[in-house]
Image (cartoon, rainbow, N blue to C red; front, side):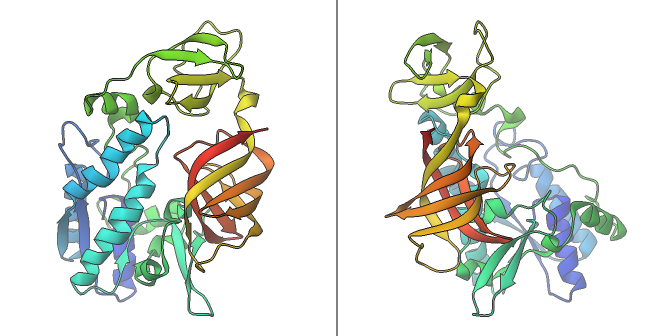
Length: 351
């Protein structure tokens, strides 16, 4: 339980369905003043909200200490990725390593049959006995993108109660149940980064300070000076400074040369990307070639694509160009409402 309305409503829905329910929060904050946003899911206030909700629901409440694991598996790799010119998605990594591995194992060891979260998605048992992950009832809130790393064993022990409802329905239900967080705003930022200031967080928590370098175009012409590659991500327009003859966007971040390639918006589009660290939810073998839809970020629309299996990575050829495919982010594959799986974007091919 994160202290938000979705996980709180999930607990209440399970109680209403006849389950025996207890609440638990992962204690992952490092230093309340330095690392955690005041209302984020890793803040002390979130724990207070979750505890209050459990009191209201009359269920037991636990706090699991995953502070060190969060630092080693989420925060340190997050910093390293930015220093390497990539843009990580720490929420996906947290889901993979903490929520659905460490947290699940802790629950099973304590004798629980399932864990449940407030994610908007659906677990479906198929006719062959396998479990599948489907998108939620509401496309506007669907969070299946962040769950593509789930395995069969994890899905077997996972419940996603809010995935059958829209967000307004969940808020209305929480209000009817007199849950204290029914009108609590959704968190929009990474929980351990204040004010969305990634670069400031990295500078404060590492001894390696960013070095200035050159803005260049695709032909290698020097266009200006950047303030350190941790400040930039593919597709970015703001924060590049002025003096250009037209609006400029980040096309590529080159850690080895300490250069940031910039150009017009049309240059941020690509048809082909490569991804590794692949997870396929149903079936252990990736077909040599198949057609599906894919999305390159949580907020992106699905696009028709051809996927080609190349050893331990996949090549994804989009039918239409996609904008700002970003190394370090995830690409997730869909077959209709079903999540096939996904991987981490490593490389994009300009077209």
